[in-house]
Length: 328
Ligand SMILES: NC(=O)c1ccc[n+]([C@@H]2O[C@H](COP(=O)([O-])OP(=O)(O)OC[C@H]3O[C@@H](n4cnc5c(N)ncnc54)[C@H](OP(=O)(O)O)[C@@H]3O)[C@@H](O)[C@H]2O)c1
View 1 (cartoon, rainbow, N blue to C red):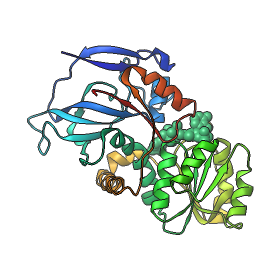
View 2: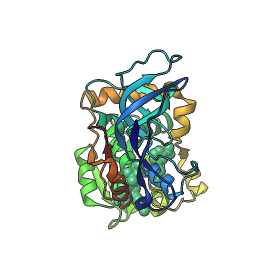
View 3: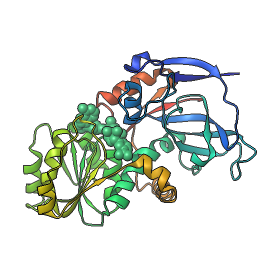
């Protein structure tokens, strides 16, 4: 028996990804085989295919990190899981296939009420945003949270979570459609960084006080400017550099504001702090079930159109998450 899978044989353009027929995976010790139903595309997946990510899988490899599906086979030495269980996984790559073999330790059950496509959007986007705001940023109610890249996967999750956690959220993006979604999802104030000076506007909105927490998914010029928007004792949460350039943070500004620059490394958090990661995800599930937060799926794509999904994300068209669906 064979399965279809997306494979990267050559680093670079998404157009070089191929749909290959491969042998079905067979179960191995400490692993399960999962029939995949939905894969959410992350910015990291683009970087991996382009060869720009710090990890370089051996070619050819199957991209895809965050996915949901149903367990088909369970190794004899795996306990507490069974064929038929609805699950999700945050992995490194390997998800964009009709079936995949994963370590049982990476598998999390998903509640019945959460559809597969929604579940796939949660681990990296919402997992990173909640880890950043809660464990790294110590966000408290009534604080002011500035989100850069507020229409993207992690950014929009941070807007929703920050609002739910009681913060006053200022959403920053380069596109009015993204900003309107951020408003619907809880942002009180919107700033378009393509036509407004970020620092002047933040100072105006906060009456010169600045922001208690700044979640930066973008870096580049916006990330550099954001340092000047931090309040006394504020926290700059460094999540990513979608804008390309990595800002050099001026220590003098941090000193003057008693501020902290805090790294957010979700991948390491999942491995090193697995109980905290699982507790955060459990809480995110509850909030989704209770409709306190509503993940936005911009578009669904079939497996063979994965390259289009990746191109749309690269072209900054996507608001929230784009999802590849399989086995429908
Ligand atoms: N530290 C971690 O553990 C961790 C975890 C997850 C993600 N990340 C990183 O965080 C960043 C955001 O991830 P994401 O999944 O939210 O990505 P995304 O969905 O693609 O969103 C990124 C946002 O960045 C903005 N942006 C500005 N300049 C851009 C450019 N040149 N190219 C693309 N986007 C640009 C875009 O908003 P506008 O169009 O409004 O400017 C876009 O909506 C990425 O760098 C990713 O690798 C880090």
